Image (tube, rainbow, N blue to C red):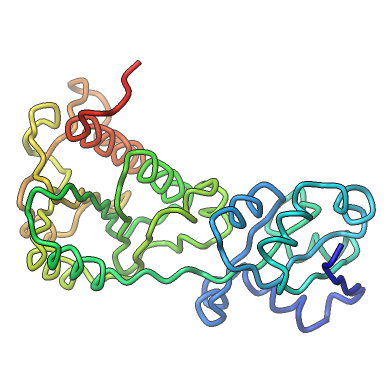
Length: 286
């Protein structure tokens, strides 16, 4: 095995301190790194060419299974330049966010996606019939909801997910787990000011389709070729600016006198699926 491991026994080691700090969003933003907890999520990241900086294994995991496992071969192939550490189980408990700490975790570089560049490229491509779909989440707060929305966006051929300023961090440990690898295959644009988003969507010919009440019922709605499906905050809903900027407003039909609104990730999933079905004639239907 060509990977070189260093044993660390102190929780006060500088590298261990840095990894422990990645539980906090400010530390993630400053370092440009995020956590991957567990072998399966690390394999997903490696297969999608996420850049791994540090891999940490417990002594138990390293001695019991690592060298014979699939993960060792993938790391040798995709992350030979990463740093490799072996620590006591107690240290892993301190750096992991899980109640049952994994035998392995890693730090990785957060991908950076440029929304302005993506929309400029779209506008330069010409041809308003080019099928393009973005999902916009305005100040979404729950990382579990965000992770679910990321999975749905990837499943239903979305071209990217846009998070407005004030949204939760897609690279928080909970969001990364909830996305289950989809985060590594979908462009995610973060900290986008709503006013700027409205401006560049209009300039690029991308219609803003806001999901709100009242609106045209979703089953009857005909989607434009280029659109962004917009959903609001879990508690407050859409901002007034976004409502006013909407090219269309759409409502998901529900049973009368039932609950007031759907969970945002469920609503986004339903809309993405509806868009996918209506605009993909080659989609497989069971």
